[in-house]
Length: 437
Image (cartoon, rainbow, N blue to C red; front, side, top):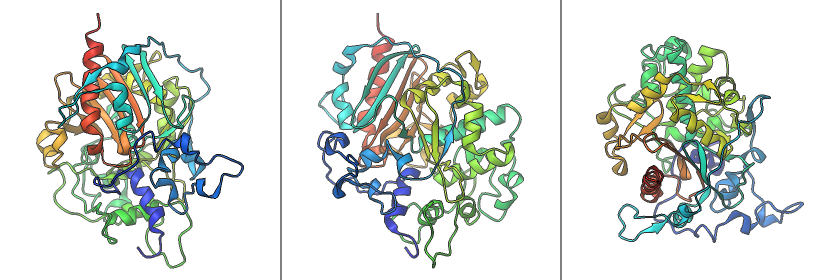
């Protein structure tokens, strides 16, 4: 790809949600690839073969990426998402040590595995489980610590979609209006004629190929535009997310089918920034983060002009992700605040159009839908979740009163690599906790 180092751009694809390795590739297992045992970036300075850099793309080559996902702020420019100055809201603990022995059978398997074994199978970096608001399970692996922050990848999209739904409920944003009503600069792009609702539910008709093997695919232009490194002298493409979004061309009809495309969230982020006068990082801080009583600031990666990466740049603490999930489970109430109107949560839980979602062809997600950038299972418990590449997840089961927050560094970006273990694991744990005496 002319004018941009392919490795550096490829690494941004992983943040955006694109699989950049083959599912048929063989990788070292979770123990062999443990970033703490491999001692990445240890020493003053680290040995040459243990140094990880953003500029050469080494930070997202497996297994080095298992260290990087917990240390993005050391490697690239970011913007803070302040928690404010209030005291953190404590999490009560009621640990169930026997969860590790809980057994379930993965999809397309006849052999049961234990919950503890599943963590290694999915390269888990950390997991927190809440039941009725109490921490019943918490574990950290590799280099992630309770006080650490981890890349949320495309779970970021769910935060942006939730902010949009909040502004809709408050009357600041009209979902039926066209995108170019709010951002005239997008009038000549494919986004201009889409409605805000079509952005929020990813049913836009845009040309956005995610075929990384094609050097002319739009995904490369997106990654190059968002790359914060100085551009080569011969580079003539977009130099920011804003510039890239104006180049997106139409393909298909708006509103016809669900298409999971990160550019939709970047466009929605621009709409939110234009409506509120705040970046999505500032908006998240003011409308949600400072009201949750979280323990830590969060942060977001940015492009060369400081625009937060709405499609996948959020980094946060695991316990704070669980707090966010618990707030949503409780119809928007947490820490004494009605942070989200209950109508927002009800709208998320009701889901989107199943027929439009089915056109995307997710074999492991049959019967699901997508609403406000949440994935809705429509299972008997009404579970819904946020999902990010390499195994990031926030799973909410309102019937079982369970929230599961997980960070991971699976070598394969696509969730189809970990869903066969993760989805039955979540369901088994919810069933176990729901039926406790």
